[in-house]
Structures are given as C-alpha cells and as structure tokens.
Length: 178
Image (cartoon, rainbow, N blue to C red; front, side, top):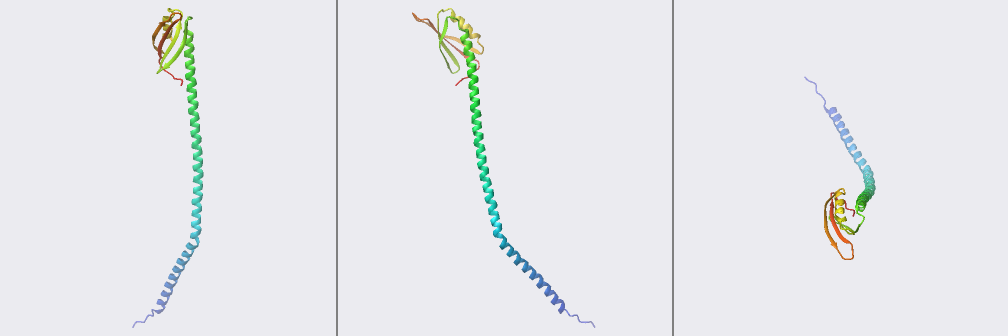
C-alpha cells in the first residue's frame, strides 16, 4: 500500500507565494503611477524651461547673425566704393597722362578748343595759325601709344580767324572715367 500524500500545505504555500507576487506587482505599479504623477509636472516645467531657453538663445543668435550680416554688407559696400574710387582715380590718372602727352605734342601754333569722347572715340577741335602744322599734328597723334584710327574730320578756314580743325581717334583700350 502506498501512503497518502497531503497536498494541502503545498497549495497553501503556493497561493501565498502568488499573492505576494501579485501584491508586490500591484504595489510596484501603484508606486510607479504615483511617481509618474508626482514627477510629470516637474518634467513638463523643465521641458518648458528648456524650450524657453532654447528660443531665447536662438533669438539672440538670430539678432547677432543679422548684425554680423549687416556689418558684412556695409563692409562689402565700403569695399565696392573704395574699389570704384580707386578705379576712377586710376582712370583719371591715365587720362591725365594721355591729355598731358597730347598737350605736349601740339605744335606751337595749334591750340585745342574742345575735346569730347563718345562711344570710345575721341574728337578734338582746335585752331591752327599755320596749315602746315596740321599734318605734323596728325603724325604726332599717330605716334601716341595706344591710339588707333586717327582721321581728320574736317578743316575749315574762316576769314579773319585761324584755321579750325577737328580730328577723331580711338584708344586701343578705353578706360572711361565716369
């Protein structure tokens, strides 16, 4: 015969163990819910503060970048003006040299009354005491550096006045001093 085994104490221990597990699980869930309920407002406040600080930083950064951009634009504008001024000074200096050379090559009996430049062509008008000086002037104009296409536009003799003449020519590279 076999002896009878009593399973009742085992069942009771098993039930108590399960009750303890479920009780600990319920207590853990309850504590977690309480912890979340307590810390959520603080977390939301912290996130809001972080967003506010980030927005403030970005607005300061934007203002700083706008200021730097405006400064860079001002600097670029000043640089362009300086370059334009230097280019103009250089062009004026070159034209001064050209006009000085032109004045130096004029024969003694010739003087200029006007000088104009239109579309890269220079027209000079003047008066001459001797008609023989005009071919000499044309020859000297052709000898000037960077001058091309010299032509006599017209010669006119008026009674009781000197001989009026006009020449046109172009420069090989034209720098306009505006």
